[in-house]
Length: 423
Ligand SMILES: Nc1ncnc2c1ncn2[C@@H]1O[C@H](COP(=O)(O)OP(=O)(O)OP(=O)(O)O)[C@@H](O)[C@H]1O
Ligand SMILES: [Mg+2]
Image 1 (cartoon, rainbow, N blue to C red):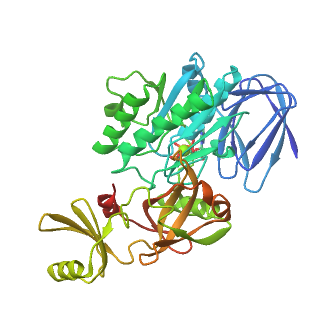
Image 2 (cartoon, protein in one colour):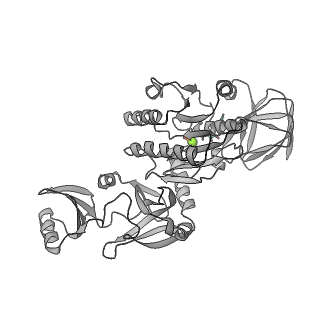
Image 3 (cartoon, protein in one colour):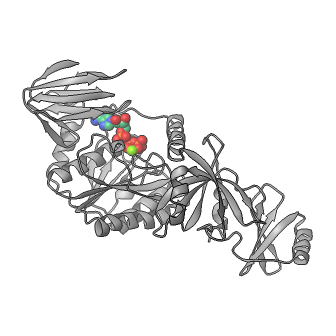
């Protein structure tokens, strides 16, 4: 334990794990002025920049690897962020955009704190499906902010919506719809005054630009906060009024591998303690796949179809002008036979697919991983958490995702062909 004196105007960078207790004076951190007797923490492997607003005395508890360094004003963006943000009234929807590692989550915590300090009721919607701070990877997660935080990670999702993947490429339309639903839920059901929406760092390609622009047009945020390194957000921001902030200069950038490991720990953490359940697909069908939902076709038609396709077909179901055929093979493909579209589903395609077990409102009860579909028994084996087992009665349907995991929850691949199958 160490007591540190800080002069008014001093700026420090703290690397966690650390706890800071203000003994005397005032310390500004993440939008909050902490006074005598108040404290805040800096999480492990995270950095935070703080400023003494007065001659102050702080007690520092530094954990292993923690660091405190005084920096020269101007070296950090804390003053610049504060001057651009302090005059804003954070009521309504605040949308935060920027590439990876520019401080989006930090800015979300900061705005949330500031809104809370004004006496507003605040919700945070984290729509970063890759590095979600509130809930599991592949989700939009939301919660109310009831006390100040230094990192969004300190919060736990009250509700999550399963978005099937760790990247919104190809599935961003549903993301726009669901983020909008999450925001409306916070406003209408929780009655909040402020909703801070954090987003993913997918920015650069054309589809990402289209996604982010559609999101802005749909949410119509009262404040659009853009953290920009160079000019990468220009195409997204064109025609919109935005507060453009510079990124902090010394962020701890995560490598691709870091991000993957972080997510994998996330799956493991949320599918814990693990249990394997046999779920009846008649009672709890797939939300987004029509498998087993049509009429099973007769043996003779099935054999004819198999001959035409040159594939062994174990089962086939007809739904409208589509036939879903479970085949021996390893590529999910769609073939035209007569007036029908035949969707060839490899017998083992489901193994390892991440799924979301959804309730009647479309919120996540819990994540799971598909093990095997037994077409004859109309059952599916799902590895999930014991919490989901207890709440199985709340599950309306199983939404199949496109991330494939191995038995230790390591990401193996993204199965985008699966999207062709969706209804
Ligand atoms: N002012 C700052 N100075 C130094 N480091 C900072 C500052 N603000 C945030 N950081 C650190 O930089 C890292 C990235 O910040 P943050 O998580 O807010 O960014 P992000 O844009 O949300 O990243 P991601 O793309 O991973 O979601 C974190 O480790 C955070 O602790
Ligand atoms: Mg983030």
